[in-house]
Image (cartoon, rainbow, N blue to C red):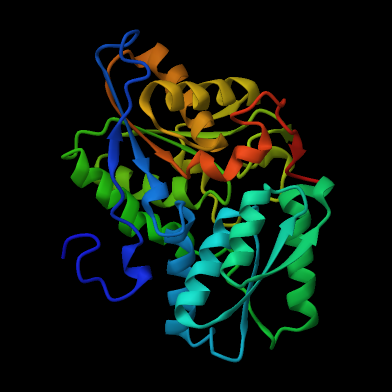
Amino acid sequence: MARGVGVPGITRLVGNTPLLRVRLFDREFPQLEVYAKAEWFNPGGSVKDRAALSMIEDGERRGALTRDKTIVDSTSGNTGIAYALIGSAKGYRVKLVMPGNVSAERKALVTAYGAGIVYSDAGEGSDGAIRMVRDMVAASPDEYFYPDQYSNPANPRAHYEGTAVEILEQTNGRITHFVAGLGTTGTFVGTSRRLKEHDASIRTIAVEPEDAFHGLEGLKHLPTAIVPRIWDESLADEVWGCPTEPAYDLARSVARTEGLLVGHSSGAALWAVRRLAETIREGVVVTVFPDSGDRYLSTGLYGSAPPRLRRTSP
């Protein structure tokens, strides 16, 4: 069935996102092909639609998610938007724990879908939200369905069964390198696992902020953070720490030269692609643009304001 033709519900539109050619580095590296999965084509506007739908439907199949329970999880924004959209579509209540400093656009989107928000200490970043939601669930275990995106194998499974398969089909199996940022780590882990099963020679590069204080919303500095249980370091041939300002510069560049308005983490992915290109000079590199930049307009990413540094760990 063609995308968008006769689809009975909004959740059926999750996945099958376009793979776009990125020309930003063509002049300097003419033998390198760079492609990006345009994940803002998902109905909730981000790659997190994939994991959220996978975890919710897994909960339904196991009988862990029932109509009398509220979906609850910690999130820096995109997974929360996905939970809120899918919860609305399927008729579930949703409550989200979010750091107080997530972008205004993300807060507004969650609220628009009817989800409730509990704010954790902004200074404690995503780890503070994780601790708060764990306390809430421990206090009222019968009230909540807690997918726990950082620990749930249905998160990377969404990318193992979806994102990676799409990449292989869209590149006709020509991919030589895969680059993705680390947040929950689900996108990187699930996609890399499937790609390496297909061809062990495919090189995988994971990208995280270079330190605990950074302006790359949605990414985690794993050495100083609560490490997600789904993280599998053996799948990463390299893990690179990205500085904030160069990531911002590259996000702005791809917006102004190619019409691709992307978020902070897409800029970090481009930084890693640029660094990789200096070494390999040629190949077929695929990365993931997790979301659009329109939900970060208040953060200074596309304005004159400096990056708002935040901590991803206590």
